[in-house]
Image (tube, rainbow, N blue to C red):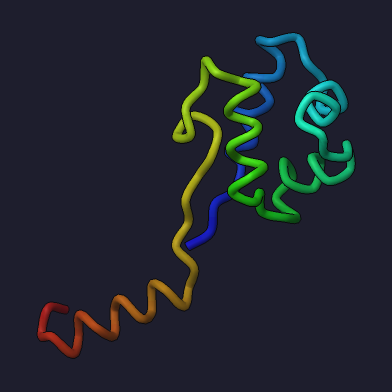
Length: 88
């Protein structure tokens, strides 16, 4: 399982708060470059980063700002298990 930023929702949230990525990065104690990599999907946010972002954007929920993706290996393992159990 992989958690990534819902980029569109995140950009809207920043706009509504009149914040730039740089402003948010300073507020949460991460570099602007690191936050940019998270928002653009080049890196995944750690649980600590997700928690701090949500603390600074309290009007948004986890589901508003983040997307949970199943990895291919997880999906394949689930499919293999279902086949073995005669469910597929």
